[in-house]
Image 1 (cartoon, one colour):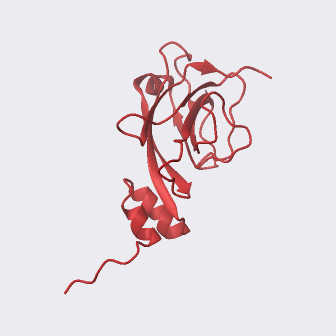
Image 2: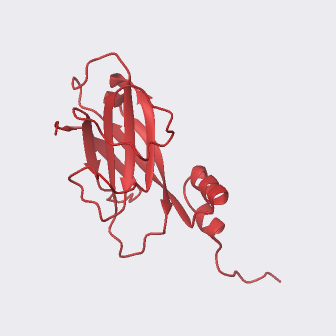
Length: 163
C-alpha cells in the first residue's frame, strides 16, 4: 500500500520549479523558496557604439518596488550580470534569474525586473546583487505579466541622467 503524502518539504517545493539552478540554491543554501524569472533584454539599434564590451546587469525586486525607477537601497530578490557586445543586445540576451526568499502569496503583487548596460565587463561579484547603475547607463524596467507570469521582456530605452 502506498504511503499518503505528508506535508511538502522545502526541497520538494523547489523541485517543482522550472530551473535546476533553483534546486541547487534550495538544497545548498537551505532557502525556503526559489523560483526562476526569465528575462529577455534588448537594446534599440544604433544606441551604443559598435564594438567594445559592456556589462549587462539584471535584477528582480518584490512588488513593493515601482516600475518607474531603479531602487537605490532595496535588496534584489535575484540578480545576474554578463559581459556582452552591442550586437548581442540588439539581437537580444536571455537570462534566467533565480529569486530567493519567501514564496509569494496568491494576492501578492508581481515584482519588477530592472536591467541596465554600462561600459566595461562583468566583475568578480558574480551575481551583481549590490550593483547600481552609473550615470549614462541605458536601462529598462518591466513587470512580469500576461500568460507566462515568470517571463519578461525589457527594452533598454531609458538613459540614467547624471545627478
